[in-house]
Length: 223
Image 1: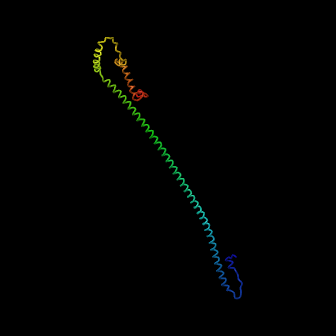
Image 2: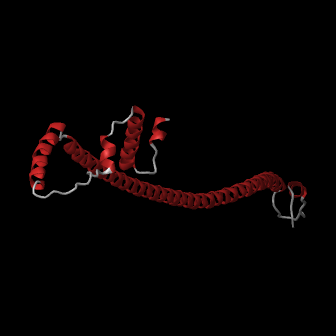
């Protein structure tokens, strides 16, 4: 049964002989009704506050849930970002190692090629030195032969001709004309300036071919 303050105030009781004092009873009922009204108002106020608190609590729970989800997402994203960063760093490291290995291999090949070129140059140098030595040796021998001048040749002729005449006296026989080597005759003939110039050019080309080989032409250097 739900009572209101008005019902409490309007409540009537039966009167009997030797009953309670009506004034005191009415006063007490009035006081109880006021207190009950006060309690009802306080209870209603508490109910309203409770509703507000429940609403705020629901909002707080929603915020907490959102924060937890956000934190979870941040953690997951952080973990994913961390893994991606690790993968990217590993990929960069591998690419750097590959580039370094390729560069090292190129450097090794370049060094190998340079060594081969150096060996070829050294071989060409030794070959050129050998040719020059051979050529200089031939020219020195030629100079030694040319050092025999006409006086020496006359001395040799004076020594050999009388001896040949003495040995030929007891035997009388017809002597055939002395046949000289055509090459010697050719050397003893006076040469014209044009023939001499052509021979000098031919000798220069032969000298050039002895030094640098027959594949190169001296005219290529004069161009």
